[in-house]
Length: 331
Image (cartoon, rainbow, N blue to C red):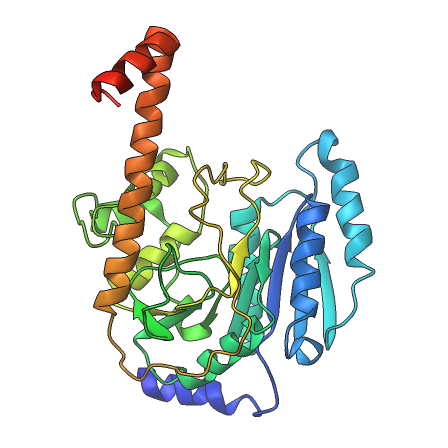
């Protein structure tokens, strides 16, 4: 089907006073979930937004009480147009939950806003997402909207811009774009090889393809890298703002795939004003790419230096570290 025609069909199913549903995925982190939902309640448009909350079942006996505490809190939540809680009877895991939940809701509504329980939002997050979903819904190259963009020093970038790289910390998409999603590592590896594609790997600063390989071997079971890669293969674009509308509070070793943010790389000040200038240039932003690449290069250098420090400390002790610092070599 013609892409423009499909976008028009999706658009025609909505009245102008209806807003995209939000889907929130939770498990056993009460404090994180509370902060995420309470921030979302403070959003402009919250009381006009339908909220679907997926609550995963405990994976073991040790998680039963914490899951129960989260579910008790979820049933006390108010402040939205509609709240529907989906309580899993068995443990699905985050990736399966997201794939199933996003597919179900976006197929029903045609567009969707997605959050996990460790994402805190700006008061203007919902407005930004809904505006972007309407403005670009007939632009087939635009396949997602993200609320967080990596790196610091973004203030000199345009208010909004496009990248080919997808960030999953508070995002939105349309049914047509999600239809290209397929979590099939065997097929992906057999048909594509991005290992040496520097551009795909964030200009060589991140090894994104390694995540695909880990999913192939079974060392990981994730979803985001497959949407990231699908957008890349289809030469799609993702919209970002130069001021973040999402903050990931999960860098405390409480989540499945987040450790600690040792260098404060992911800390950000949330935007406190509406996004007004939505770019009409449907191309990737060279200045934004440069900013993201530079930021990852800095964090990689710091990480490598820290790794070398630990290795020397283990091998030679504190005296060895001091000697190397004095000689300005080896660290």
